[in-house]
Image 1 (tube, rainbow, N blue to C red):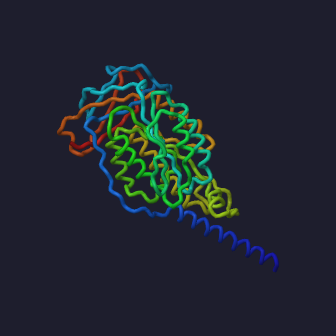
Image 2: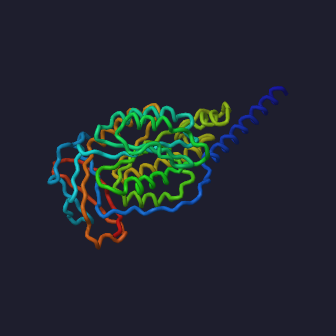
Image 3: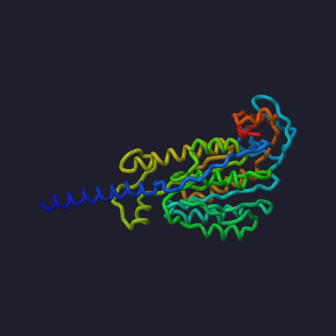
Length: 336
């Protein structure tokens, strides 16, 4: 009889934990952000970021404008802009500070500071945090101390929400819209978006109209640790194994997989890269991003005015180097 009562209490306890877990999913995913207008990304000069590597995956430097051929809808285009990796780059470092990062934010900030140390003197960066709000923690700067201090200011948001898509769009249209040259967004997030005004499809269209490269660094968080930190609850639910598709974490894992797939699509569309990284491996992942940024070319051309019709146009880049592998922006959408 006593054993039956204990088992029943244990079952009730697990049910309570499962309900609390469901509440955690709901509270982290709530959408409470008022609408704000979206702004269209426009540009006359079409910029095409390009990465060239050999058949062993090693980056190729020292190429000149004459080594490249640029095509719009299979029609050759004269290259009006050519920038090598020696030229400076502007970087927006976007940090997810939503409530789901409460257990990992300190490690994220440490890795982000080490990433900034790898920037060259001519490069500039600024730091943005996003949760239920979007906060610019620093101006565009090459001062490492100023940027490190900005990262230190990042903290978990007070309110529920993760306006990741809004943050990306705002940086592209307000900070990176004017001026030419190399531009990149380095996005560090678990990929969940709750509360953004801009839709997933609209952001993809905006990225297609932008000359900004997006490097997405995606990491997992342990929901049990989040529950413990937010609610003070020591969960007796089984250990979380990302991607297992079994047990009480199925909904959580499905959301994470959809988020990762979307980040990969964003990065691929912009000619950037998508990285999956354990929080403990962020230093190494950041180093890989920094290395690629140091090996990026930028081409540009002015399309015929008839092409500035808002429709999608395909881009292709070729290099006069045997067996070279080229990764470049694949399309653009521009208006007059």
